[in-house]
Image 1 (cartoon, each protein chain N blue to C red):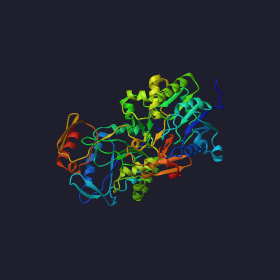
Image 2: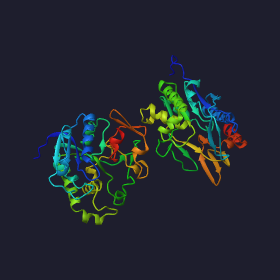
Image 3: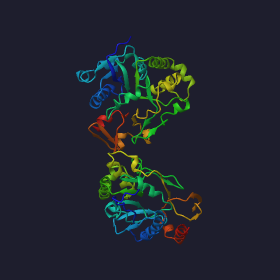
Image 4: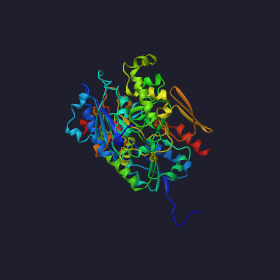
Length: 272
Length: 258
């Protein structure tokens, strides 16, 4: 029987690479969660190299620092193959898993009432700056071509349960057998993104077990350029006004009330 | 049963019209007035005398011409009605649907969607900007929130270059559509509220018109190289030359005598 540290908390993975200081993003995210959420326990999952970089400044903010026992992404520049491990390493009975480049602008504790209708729950679309649903975004041709569920893993919920265990075991198998699986898919990359690997797992297990289409509030704003209708090279911080008013971020003169997946890694330092 | 202790709210239509050296906007407004009076059975007031110096592209002449479109923010102050239907002079009313809005409007309702009959158009104020609201038609009650909205539109008109930069607006000339879009965004807490939008789109004919006739319950519209049959409905005619034509006069007579 697993022993958990707490009932509910937020978890992110921070594995630095040559380009991005994910530990710093996780630190900023933890500060943001402490400032915006009533239930604000925060855990970070790091590899051995990133663990070396953790200082007292981080320890003051991170409630739990967990080290990966085996690093499946050791040889990857964009380290995504450890995502399946969150189920086995989370210190929480119920986890809201976040990508580290996502910030909250208001408390979302009330979301749990809806999320608890499933053992594991992904959102089925993201939003643009104007709270418009974005389904099958220009980045998701692979989903359309392969008829995969259009789920987003930037923010999802799971709790300790048989369904979640089945899901993450399946996800692990997808990573483990990617070289065989990709031969049966169109438009695939050499390595699976988290969204694709988890979409395949959701398809195998049945997306009805891990999504709630009517739960439209469980969502985030995605700032990838093409989702905003822009060219790929056009960054938010270069093209529109970004203002902070307490915890609310106003982008292009629109207050953002949903979590903001800022994607552009210099977003915080460029705007605060 | 009618409550005789409560006075009936006054209702009416307001149209702004300011002549330029090129276009007789007061005649255009007079023509819109005839239709509004006929179909809505409401009094119509025409406001004139605003002199903001501006320019617009004339779709009939293909040239930029003088345009006095300022002062719309005064509608709240100048309207003699408790409930006002504010329309552009080139918005022709052919049914009584706007009366339904008077029953449900809280503060104001403005047009969210504009469907062009014969071409695609961007609904954004700029590539990096918000979707445009259309000041062509709006309905408002005289409430504190509506007063703030109109005051804000005035501030935006007076400081248009600042707001143009802030909102990444591509067009250089001041447009009431943009001013109301910005004011609506600000007054709703840098967000939007669907209750402030008219529940249906307006229909616009954006280019020159060869002919427009009303036969039974349909419009028969011909433009250069295209023809359309449209259900009889309110319609936004951007060709000022056609509105000032004898053919338009005949359409109005046919509609009001039917």
